Length: 403
Image (cartoon, rainbow, N blue to C red; front, side, top):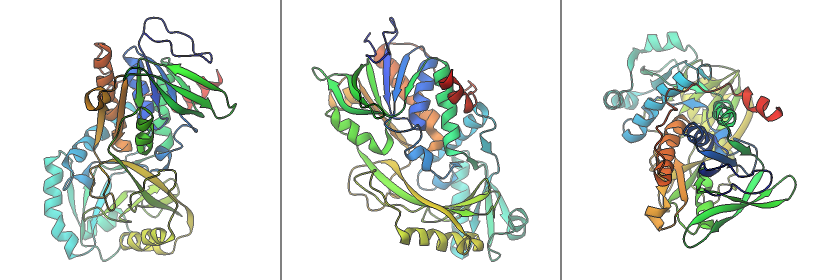
């Protein structure tokens, strides 16, 4: 097995060594899964952990209902992982449920197909009258027609991911923030490691590995090019707007096909409205278009009228890593499912695996799929343990660092 490299890393005996690139939730979950299977793990992230898409999403624990009608695969993934995350990460979520709210007759016409699709994906639903809906959430549009209750929830985008990092680190994973990959080392159509630069000291070094896992989300195509392979990814940003005031206690969705500004959810004492969708070629160059911010207010106020006038606390954008070839117009036509690419099978390049797509809700399932591929390539028979293994508190990550 390969030496994990210099810079104080040192050899790790006969255990296989996997190097993960990407310090978002998916990378942390892959590190957690592989350490439980006895693999030596090093993870590098060019910035602070969760500083990419992971730290900028809605904070929505999806039930899968949003995707049930048109993207059943993603819906099933979400509800399965929703249940697992509640079990292994207790205390990480507001288990406040969600309402899909019918504002007009078109929304009511959509309700039967929505309920049927949810039931086919094993997503629990409860149909509510106008009066029952307003009794739960009195700040909703008083003209609403009815709603459907589903098991959505809310989370802190950073802290859930840090529980995976904390547990992986406690089990021996070496996690290096502010460590940027500058090139991928290859030999005879095989990836053998990466060259990295410590962004704090400027020091360059080589890290060797038996397998390199590309878990960089919307940046996965950039890293793949360094290895001489391709990943069919479309970075699709969306704008989110946080408003001062907790005007709802449940996750509020518009009961219609997914569109702009049709989710309002509570985060502590804020209301977060999102999101828009477009496609870009560079996930580092997003911006926050002002017309998108105004769209969030306009569409969000159809669900919660106060959204139109509430004080703005922040507005930001984040890029989703959607699987698909170039040519998508807005990103909404692309599935929210995930895919793991073994580049030996796809491109004839050994030692390189990419995991991309998916949702924050499905990060554990994405990691299980990836670890299964990695272990098969290593000839390692070790079952996944993450479905039942409780995660450490997020604060343990910092405590272990200090220790």
